[in-house]
Image (cartoon, rainbow, N blue to C red; front, side, top):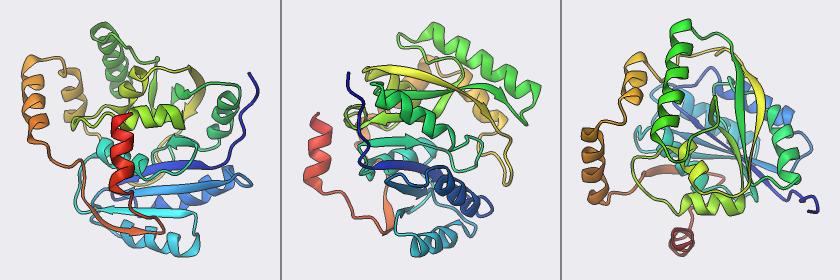
Length: 262
């Protein structure tokens, strides 16, 4: 299979109250991907600190930065979806904005994509700065999920992953409200491969995933959870509401309908 040629790389990063990491995150992404045709789509998930102002300043200085301000906090997975909806690249990478997932790994992921992989997920070999309890609960979650799911995740694989445009369009065609993107990207199929990496410790700010959130994930198999999800699905509400856009055009209704039908 001939190697693929990159036309535009989109990096999608959701942020919530990351005023201290927004600028370093942008600088590191720009340095890691210097020379590549790229755009950075940052979704502000209803931040209450100075994150929105910092992101607008970054967009004013760099036209390749596209900012989407949601009208309130909709949650990490929905904010990530909002960024994916606005991604224009033929290759898209999901990246958290807290610098724990090093953007330099994207270069290796692009190598795997150019060789034919449609989905490249980063598998953590180390988790710097995390407590033994957090590590133990993470291992337990992945073991439980592997037993319950017909489409188990790769070991230690999070949301940090690359998708070819074909895989992304298939992913965006699934519009359920309760989203688990790392599982959904496995479900769409295509050619998938892993890239090992060392996850870094958070340099600033605080984690948005508390202990109570980990316990909820462990209990996701309970039937009551699925009853609640069915009720939420039939409401038919929009996934998110955009308050403002900077350097990015709103996707047309025809374009969203086309993606949903694929």
